[in-house]
Image (cartoon, rainbow, N blue to C red; front, side, top):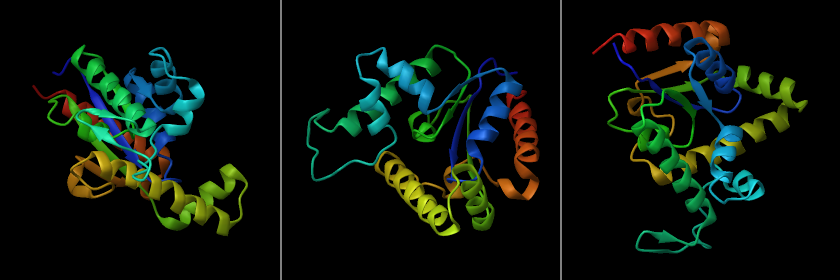
Length: 199
């Protein structure tokens, strides 16, 4: 039986990934790290809330960034590296948690207590969810999904060896509209618990 569980969860925009992550974290009684909670963690290390909000999970601007050795002048890179360091520290300290995005699958690669999950969905279902949640037209919802996913893909692929959304890079890839959000969460919780029972 594992004493620690770390779940990394990537998601397509509109797939309900955050909602599913909430259900999993609550059921397992572990901390959920998302945009808001990561922001609070890094602010305590001297970064302003506004800067973190602006740069969190954003792709690198190649034209405005330079790296000398291990140092970079890119705010996006510095926020990303602070986030990655935070995740490594929490994992090394034995904390159990679920991290949404932020290249967790790559940052914690090789950790025997880590499971990586990617949640995708049917395009029509995703568009309908974004329309309802944001009050957008179908056309605007489609554009938002493209824009958000393009940004997530660029961010992930810059820092990771595996490609964003490629099933071969994750332990489990699932379409949330097949079983619905609650059904998907229940299935993933059973999968995670089976993994935790292993030595």
